[in-house]
Each structure stands twice: as C-alpha cells, then as structure tokens.
Image 1 (cartoon, one colour):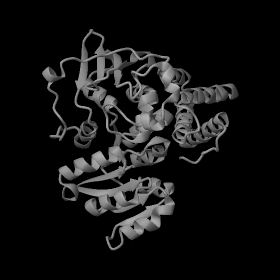
Image 2 (cartoon, helix red, strand yellow):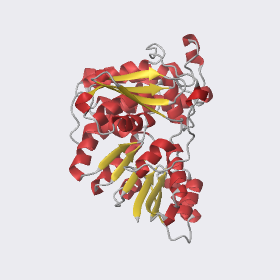
Image 3 (cartoon, rainbow, N blue to C red):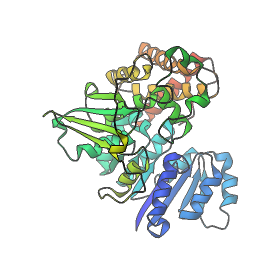
Image 4 (tube, rainbow, N blue to C red):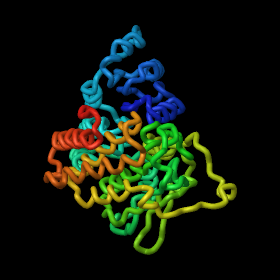
Length: 396
C-alpha cells in the first residue's frame, strides 16, 4: 500500500489533497504517515480521525494539549512545534505533499527528500530560497520533485519529456489579482479585505494578497528558473484574466504548447498524486465554445513592481532569493496587521535587497540550509527596521 504524508494539511492545498485522497479510497487505499498543520487543531483532528496517520503534528506548540485531547483514545501519536514538524518529515513515505505556506516549509520539504520519495511541491518558497540545494538533494537521494503550483505543473505537462534544449520560452500566466482593473492612484488605499478576494481562484489569504501584488508570480518566475533550469530572460509573464491557460511552452521551431484547464488546484494536485498515470479528477471540464475568447496582456511594471524585483534577484543569484522571500513575508505580515499600505510592500523588499547588496555576500551561493536560514533571519530584521515594526525572525 502506498504511503503518504501531508505537510500543511489544513490549508487550501492540504484540504484539496485530503479531498482527492478521500475520493480515491482514503485510508483503505493509502497508508498515511503524517499530517501536520499550523494551528487549526479542530480540522487537523478531524482529518486525522478520518485518515488515521501514524502521527499528527501541530506547529503551534502551545496547542499540543488541545490536539492530544481531540485525539485521545485514537491511538494516533501527537507532537507539537516546528521541530516536530521537521522530525515528522524524516519518517519514510512514498509521496509527500509539501503545502506549508512560506519559508516554514523549506526544512520539512528538504528532509522529506532523504528517503528518495516523491515530493509534491506546493511550497514555492523552497525553490526560491534554496533551489540549488533542494534540486541537488533530490538528485543525490534519487528523489523526484513534482511541481504543484498550477503554472509549473502546466509547464511540466506541456513539456512532456521534450528536450529542454529545444525550449525557447516558458510563459506563466497571471490573473492580475483583485486590483488588475483599479486605477493606480487608488491602490494605496486598498484594504486587507479587498486584497484577500481573488477573482478566479479559491486560495488562502496570504497567497491571495500575493496574487493582488503579483509577488506570488514573482516567486513563481524564480521557481521556474530553479526548477526547469531555464534562463531568466526566457521566462515570460502574461496577464490572463480568465485563468484558463496556465502555462505556455514555446519551442525553437516556432511551435507553442499550452495547458488549459479550469482554475481548480485539484488538477495540479491530482496530477502529482497519480503521476505518471492520469486519474479521473472531479474538476470542471472546459467548453471552449462557451468560453468564447481568451485574452492576454503584458503586465504593467508600475502596477506590479514585484516582477522587476524578481528579475533583479535572479540576476544576483546566490542568497538573493532567500532575502527576497523573507522581506516579502515580513512586508505581507505588516500589511495584514495594518502597519503599512498595500503599495508599501514592494518598497520594503527593495530597501532590504539594497541594504544587503551594500553589505555584500548576497550573491554567495548557498552551501547549506544554515546559510539560507541565516539570510532569512537577517532579511526579516532589516525589513522590520525598514518598517519600524517588531522583528519576527523565527518564522523558520
């Protein structure tokens, strides 16, 4: 029986993974090794009682007593804290979903590779912050990393075993987020509630806000560079309001192959879960005659400065991705807390990158996870200084 673990089980990706596993037989079809969550004890306990994992872990250690109470008598082992999440990743599993949001997902995903497992990677920050390390570890362990971001899954499928030497471009599409049609001068007044509403996708709050600022797409550009090994100048972004074309691969013979599908993350998750086979999935089928038209436009640099910052990060290389992501997460925390405006986030990230560039060392190639984690903490401290807010240097 195939063994599975889900890290970030109660988030939007984790819930969709849980749904697909249940539809494919649940614990009668799979042996569940570990389920983890950030702080949602009630939902984690419900999932655990349904799937019967070996261990259920809550990252918020203060909530461990509540989890133990909720699972009393079940025979399911429980643990709490970030260290316990990382330790759970060392338990062998055939397939691991890495769906913890943010840099907190880096260490568990990296550790899961130690068993030569298949890592379904929804945590884009792992590749942004430590792409060379992660990919090298997968090769060393004989592990497989399958992308679960809808765009990267789409590009992976469009490539279909093609020689990367024949690829000219990889185009990632973006909906444009909640504010794609807003006047530029109104963006500074955007509220957290307004930024948390996506026109097409049902996602968690943080990724939805990142979609509105296009920081999410900026991370995905870096992710594509690291995962596919394609030069930054060959990665393009198009605003595609319908969110039906997820990626397009262009080849040197002038041909292009695109991947179309409904805006439902269960496609990318289900593809990774069943790879290399394709299983029937409960997602809507497109009827192109009803769709009628598909539209595309180049992103406006003034509306989406995050994309330009991502280009600068790729040009620098080294530890710049770790700094970029840490500063972005800090700025997002501050926006959600009402401490800075929506339009301030990109400026915070730029100031942090400038400070670190001036100090030197940003371009150093990471030789270990410790180097990545040190840069993450440094960038968070600088971001806090730039915003005049308390530092949160312990996210990972």
